[in-house]
Image (cartoon, rainbow, N blue to C red; front, side, top):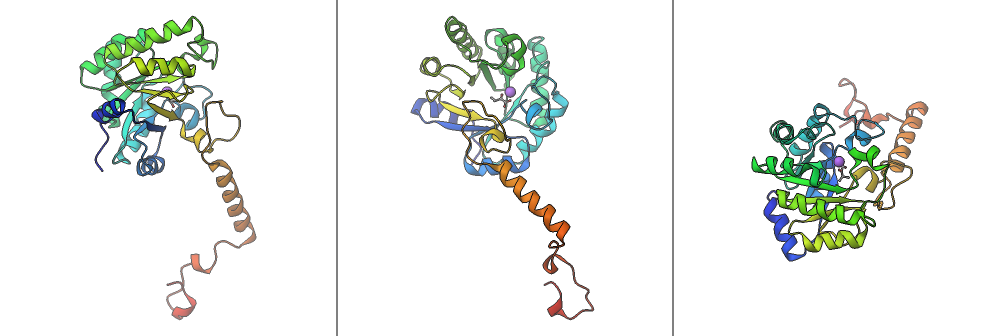
Length: 276
Ligand code: KIV
Ligand code: NA
């Protein structure tokens, strides 16, 4: 099947069809999620936590993310690949945002970029989309601002609803092709989804969005431990991998592995005694 493109997202919105997005940071998850029918893959700055082992998304750099973007883009045939601009690479203004976005498109080979913020990055969205680069916006809880927001907290409650609506309208007006809404009350997210012509992609924003996104290590349980309330786990890969690795350790120490079938034979020994 051909590559998913912007017109597919627009048509899905018109026809009320929902689609799924996952993060991906490497070859195998990219090709497996692609084959599974995930329409969009996000090479998130959440690689900071999920690949590089940082506590927050703040430290990860453009130079660290670009090779991951390249790997994911190379490993997909159908999925639309979105590269996430890290903290510090677009806030200074439209020129900085465009410069970083061009690096992501040229060096990363992704099909769109994403960056955090609503009203406050509208000019950046205008500039980048004006250069022909699709932008996915990200409003509600924005992890790069977690210190300013006072930690991981639901956004858009009470008087925050007006700000969330203003952010949603601003990114749509500025030309974003879609908007991620993170940790927003479900009724407010549904209201935004009904109002906007562009698709909303929820994470912790309830069932009223046009699409959903999850961090793959959370959704598939590669990461073990406490999950946010909005995460549903579809597998327990962490447990499977730990058990498999422990079995390998045990078989190496006991000498069960490698067995004859894993061993190259001596060509001078009769065929029956050697490996085919
Ligand atoms: O970096 C990321 O994984 C994200 C998604 C959670 C939307 O921005
Ligand atoms: Na992100």
